Image 1 (tube, one colour):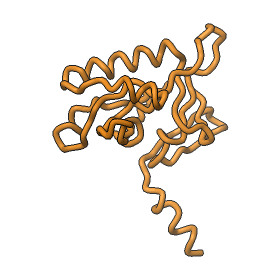
Image 2 (cartoon, helix red, strand yellow):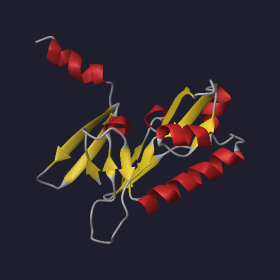
Image 3 (tube, one colour):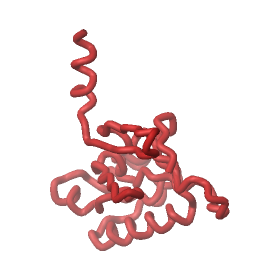
Image 4 (cartoon, helix red, strand yellow):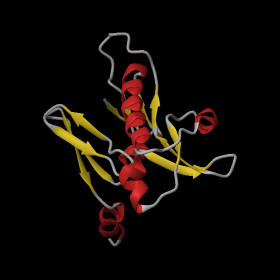
Length: 150
């Protein structure tokens, strides 16, 4: 996966996105969220659901995690993958913020592009010599404040 701070949302190959969206949708339907297809047409994100944030409904939104080689897993905070907004009809909607990108042609290209919205709240560390990348939950101010006081 390409880690790209210049791309807004994570882009996945169409087949991968379809599998993720299907499982996400199955879980949202089981929790009785109504699909908001008009919002999908409006935003280009999918799937979308009518959604009003509350402790009980927040718990029903399924978690999203990325599993990388080397036994690394990044569990995303809900706000990094499920965006809430008002739809054109004034109802509250939430959408999965993982986008469907290109057809996987089997050429060995990337498994996706990890966008900056999904990276928010993480320190991304690149170990070029070892060919590894790491993710650690951080508050940006914890990193910035010591540097800005110098």
